[in-house]
Length: 202
Image (cartoon, rainbow, N blue to C red):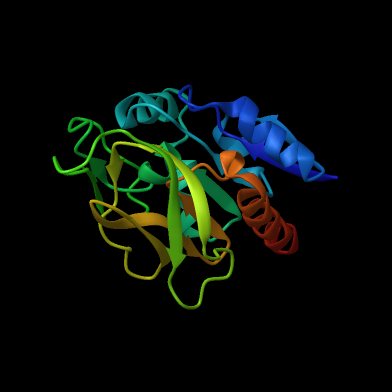
């Protein structure tokens, strides 16, 4: 059975993530210490709600450096929804909060031409060269997003008023703005592909 560690950001529906990996035959354990984040073979950084609240919990647990170093070292890591946004330097949602800075980007709000939050299914179109991502439909719940794929990453693009980054991957790190755990068979296949690669790399 695969062992997965999950970070308690305090703003995530952890139960749905755990259930999704349980269905894939994996066992998920919550970790809240820097040493555990560093030692984890496979790690998930989930999140819903506000960027600032999630980042405050990360800092309260003392996990900033461990998470940043983990992503920089290409250790198997999956970031979901606000978890993906935390990889950025900052977010317009919480101007006083500093993100992990693993990617040189600022998270911005959707424009006034669309209803926010975006709630429901939308199409995901991966860029060429993707290892984990494939075309399909995913479930979203977000008011903020990355506008451009960061340098050195392979992304997937979705349109909501205008195009935005719905996922990105680099090596063993996968970050999804959508919720793969709520995205049916397509999402389960994505989690399965990432988990298989993570087990090889661990």
